[in-house]
Amino acid sequence: MRALTRALLVAVAAGSWLFAIGPAALAHGALQSSDPAPGASLRHSPGAIRLTFSEAPERLLSSVRVLDTGGRPVGGATATTTVPGDRRTLSTSLATLPAGTYTVTWRIVSAVDGHATTGAFSFGVGGGAVAPAGPAVAAVAAGQAAGQTLAAPGPLAVAGRWAFFAGLALLTGAAACGLAVFGLRLPGQRAALLATAVAVAAAGLGAMTIDTIQQAGAPLGQVLASATGHWLAWRGAAVLGAALAVAAVLARPGRAWPLAVLGAASAGGMLAHALGGHAAAPSPVRWLHLATMWGHLVVVGIWIGGLAWLLAGLRERGEGTGADRVGAAKADPVGAAKADPVGAAKRFSRLATLSLAAVVATGMARSIDEVGGVRGLTGTGFGRALLVKLALFSGLVLLGAASHFRVVPRLRGGRAPMGRLRRNVGLELGLASAVLASAAVLSALAPGTSALRPPAGPVAAAASSPAMAPPMAPPMVRVAGADYTTSVRVTLTVSPGTAGPNRFTAQLADYDSGRPVPAVRVWLACALPNRPELGILDVDLARSAEGRWAARGSALPLSGDWDVTAFVEGAAGTVTVPLRVRVATTT
Image 1 (cartoon, rainbow, N blue to C red):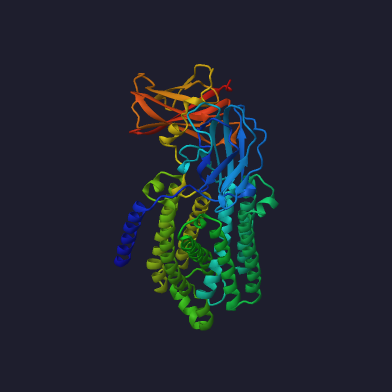
Image 2 (spheres, rainbow, N blue to C red):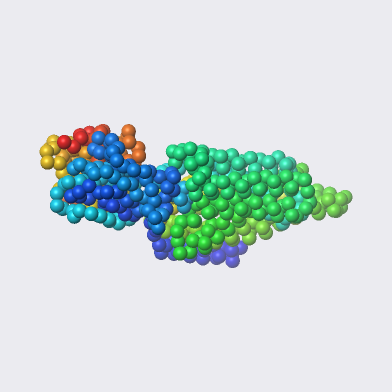
């Protein structure tokens, strides 16, 4: 036990060090560069809009639109196509645009993992001589100069992923336990449990397909013609193969080959799942990532799926102590040897120990690749979901250790009832279901290395061309509000207050005393409720005086009533102040 404790401490220390030095990565499906650049002011109309992303977008499921300040599509824009020789770039040709401010909105589905990303940015035409004619390509790593949002996972996406993997885990556990634990036989009501596993996996696949159709906003045929649809089809083929293998297992009980085929079919479904997920992102060691992810899914299936079959095996036996089973063994030594629950528990414990070691090793490798450091672990939704998963996983390990080191030895000595082991295994299975649910959330989220954060200074610099300002405009729009605890009041001035580039000035004051409030960082998140395709557009403000923050930006590219949230980060945390800004059309 001391050796195990020391090994765990070493693993935790090594994992912490690896988390600390883990490299960051670009966002999944995030805009990397554009022509025109966000905030550019051009002498002449561009002939086309070109957007380059960190991952290849699904051409059939992606779109790019150009809008005027009234939110109307610009005439003459052609269909969005990929650039020959560059699968990561989308292009939309344009007719000649008159002078004014325009907004580019885009929505893509990544061909790597199926994540949907939306975004928008503005540019001006005929604004003066601050920018040369022709291409104006600028890197905008991780959304620094263009607002972009990764679609949050909905209940259908999470439920679908949970059900698909839970069904495959039950099938993988059946194959492993049949071959290594129960002597080529499956315990309990095996036909009902195997059929349930296939049905749950199929239902999960159906939910994932419906969610993909909803995210893409495209018909089923169009989705299936894409790379994302291809991986859905391969998952379906694996479920069908598993169903045929289940029929063989039930028709040929006591044979090894149907169980082996069942294991291969369910492992194939997990491979398709890995190929359609985060691990397939472009990387010099992509195949290593895929192998690690696939191995992780398989060993988790063996361990967690095996728990369900162990519980079924334990329930086959009535209550009693080890002494009762000694008498049964004398009466029927052959039958007792085949169905001895304590022996099955010990064999499963050895299998689970090997699986646990593999789960920890592969899980650590995947976490390092996807989290990318301590900031990704604590500062992103993916990292926080991973922490929840790790907490549940730790509880599962502790319960398994209690069964392995305390309950099973006491059963063999006849000092504990079988019900205690059944209760422990039942609790493990409940925690395992929660672990699978957290894993489903993780697979639907973008990794911590690719989570989009509020932009830093380059936003204002990229979107501050004074030549884009309209020649005549209202002087300003001013609104004020406070956080829900009424501790900070924010007075926001937007000038000139029209669609396009504006100057944003935020005055921070204590709600009661009116004194300036110190802050570490202040930024604005802007959304137009009736135009969700724009996503969230951000402006990072810079301190200009005590309690005063300002910047220029194009985060209000269309006319309408905008929901603007001011984030005020101070020493005690971050407060949010909701505001409503009415933006007029450029005149």
